[in-house]
Length: 392
Image (cartoon, rainbow, N blue to C red; front, side, top):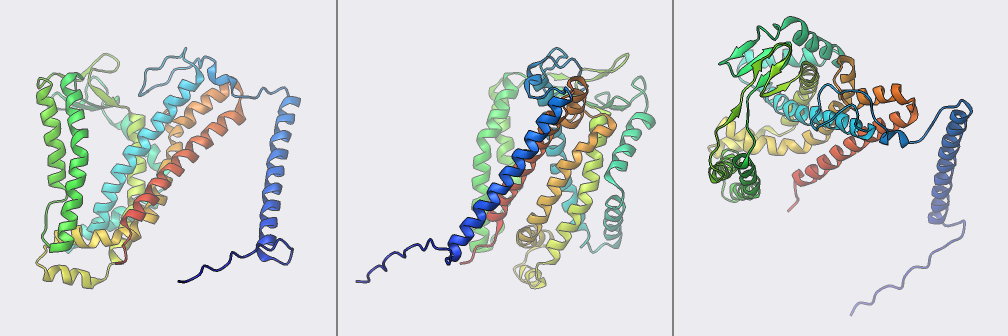
């Protein structure tokens, strides 16, 4: 029976490399702590000497200003913390929708660079070179001017079937009247999501074991859609819709995306998708050509080869750099203040002018973007670990 070696005694003398390393780390942490304390205390003393108020008590005071668009009910008499919450939600809305759209568009452009059609390859190449070489701020301004100057006025909007409108007021579209049927439809879709996810994993595992191709997209989507339809039917199958209509000064009814939101969204999506396209192209190019030949020998079509063989292997190269693009898109959303979109930077600037709490407002902006970026990076690192090739 093997005996365990006796535990090694720690050497706490200066000759120990581990001890010296621990001392250096403690000294470094102490120096950083003293520097931060000196910076904070010096800032507070200077602000007090100049009669500048400090502290976060202003967050519970009335904001006193209106916000052009909000995802939650908001009034000028509400407190400043609620105004900041509106700005954070507006920032997250642009960032989330922008990441989804930029990922889809960038992936299509990256795949299009390998098309056998020279026109498609040329268009994808031209798109990338055009949009990634123009500063994103200029693109935001161009799209905002397009929606506010070139589009027709509210009284003469572009319309599609009298249901969808595009004018200086933005993009207006009908929405269902929310009720029990819509709530049960959403619940049915939520219940079926785990089932669709489990089926997709089973289909991928069966493909790896038997090389038999099963749908990993259409069938999961059909499962979620079927659950939503069953919930809608159980809720009485409501068919009432709220349609938009041109009013005297604005679009009435339905839902609308303002010109500011559309300008920010289009500018960020078109700019970021050009970089994502290059990331996807590099990832696909990193997969050995022998994989394509092996897939062809199994009888897989070109689309199936790309979807089932190439892209899964390219993900390990694509995900790390695409995470940086997601972070860039989120941080570039702060440029929305240039065209008047009420994101967290715009709200913080207005609150700063009203209260004079510059340090506090800038601190809130930094914490919002730091939290958002770290959350995005954490999720992408988790997904990267799941997508990494496992050694057998």
